[in-house]
Image 1: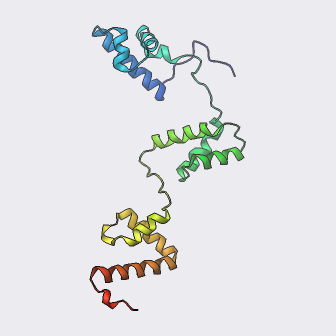
Image 2: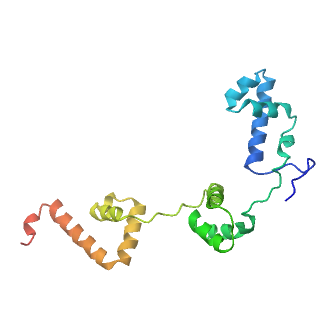
Image 3: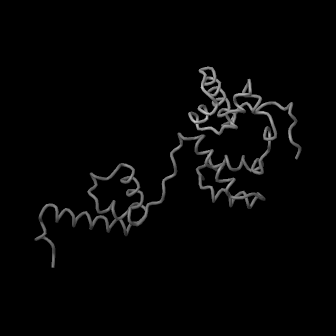
Amino acid sequence: MSLPSATAEPRRTGRLSDRVREQHAGVHTLIREGVSLRAIGRRLGLARGTVRRLAHASDPDELLVGRWTGRTSILDPYKPHLNQRYAEGCTVARRLFEEIRQRGYPGQEQIVRVYVRRLRDAFPHQDPPRRKPSVRDVTRWITRHPDRLAADDAQQLKEILARVPALARTAEHVRAFAELMNNRRGHQLKD
């Protein structure tokens, strides 16, 4: 792999370029106000070397050209598959890693985890997948008064009871017992 030459085009989009442009503007604004480089570093939470590089660059594009510009990732050939599977609702990085490993991906799982995290950040409008309810969750939902259940919990309980008839019968018995106790009709219990 050859490194790009110094005449390469600067990176135009992405988190790095956005952050560098933001920092460059902040540093130059504070310089115009007469703030020292050391104070700028403290205010912006940047290292002195970073502040110095930003201060000496007349344009942020000067900082965005270099050995990292245009670099390819080991994950690039597998990104279309990851994007498709993520859009289909498979958002578990470990599962996605296993899938692309079977397709020949030679890299580490951590690289896939970082990419999936970026997908989650890029698509915040999508609801995160619901975790499977635990036995404790279902027990709590069955024993709680139906009016006091959150809408999502009530929906999940309804789905579970529809799939497991024995649990649905148990839930009916629990509710009948609770009604007896709440309405003080315990004397109706059979021996």
